Image (cartoon, rainbow over all chains, first blue to last red; front, side, top):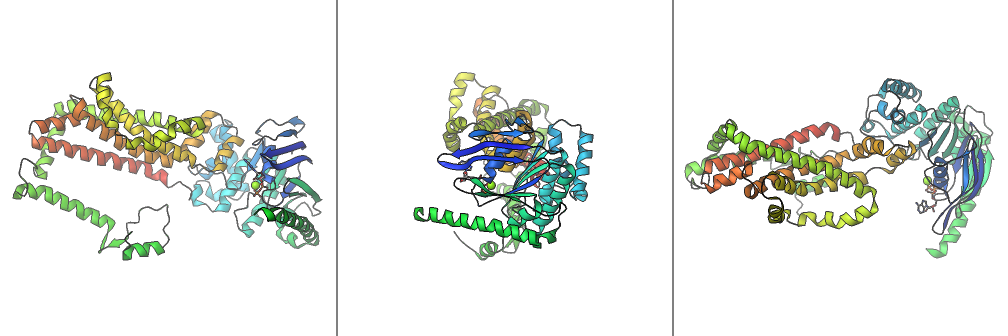
Length: 260
Length: 278
Ligand SMILES: Nc1ncnc2c1ncn2[C@@H]1O[C@H](COP(=O)(O)OP(=O)(O)OP(=O)(O)O)[C@@H](O)[C@H]1O
Ligand SMILES: [Mg+2]
């Protein structure tokens, strides 16, 4: 079952930049939440704080009720560039998380094969990352995350470096496998369409100070397919998000104008 | 910069940087490898014919065939093997291992700790401008002559190449890989041996080849002056005794040794060098 994530007055300051103003949010177990917003608004900062990779200045992150103190095993993180290890085969990359948790070779390879099948990489178990496309490498990273059966998955623009089609395909694949495992997901993206298509809930962030401006429920059926991008619900949502982001961008431009 | 027709051509065709063997290119009708072979053949021919035809006098140079014969003779001479070849190989090996182990360790520290980097950076940058070999009188005074100062000098000479390449390799590790190590909560041992060192290995292997060459150079050079045994001592001794054929046979063996080690190394590291993401 998915983890419940509670943010209580979490914030982060870098020098005199308020990267994240005090934020209060709850991610309900098993929900898929996307975070969108302009570059530099603090999305990665928020995600890293939940991942335990970044310490906020104040506030608290509660995961299933207990305060987070750093990275935890049950949280899977997917980065923008696929964090694959070039000297390991696809199979051993996938089994790497289990390996560091001292799961015996045979067991971890068995699990790795199984998750590789789920992400459609069965035919590439013995390949090395340099023999794969960018999208396939990202699938390896997803497979590694799935191998530990996480209750919380944090993804920071995982498909940002990929082309539009691959991005949609991989996003929907991720959604499907995540639904099977029931993990809670926080997914950062630049793509508003992607946000609408994949998530149950969209959080829209604004910059300076970074804060969540809009909290939207996505009223689409739980099983998604690519055609839903064109549905009236999705179109309306995208428009709503754009309106907010556009005024944000204008505000940012006015603020930055005299300085540059 | 001179830009011949060939150079311009290669400038317009994008070359993949992970494929250094661009030997297909032709200059004056021969590939680069072709020219290498021609050069080698000419050298061999000169070394054989020049002394025979009297172009150089026979006290300066002996025909190559004589060197080769003598070299084979030495390789079957138990005294040469136990007094000269084995001690040199042993010194090279020990110096190399010391340099590699301490170089990688220091490299890890320099990469990990800012204070270590700030302290060592000026040294690393200027190290090879300092003639390490000039330290030898000091080492003789401190340690006498023999195995220990030789190995120490060679280690000192080789270690910096290891440190630099290790730091370069570690600096080049993608941020996402480091963050992965953090997310998976690797302990320092796992982090070092399962992530950091394998990730830095392509650069480290460059350092390994340099360190091996440097160990070899320094051991032989030190043996000239600091030793009563070893291949370097054999050569200088032969030189002092006007045993010209012995001297050249020794030099030839050094050549073959250096080339052989280098090729063996390149071959051993090749399969791994391909597993690098572009
Ligand atoms: N280590 C740091 N030191 C100083 N400032 C930082 C640091 N990390 C982030 N910041 C600042 O905090 C703000 C938020 O950064 P963050 O990376 O969270 O943005 P983001 O929303 O993820 O942007 P992007 O969409 O470009 O990834 C930015 O203004 C950035 O300059
Ligand atoms: Mg970011």
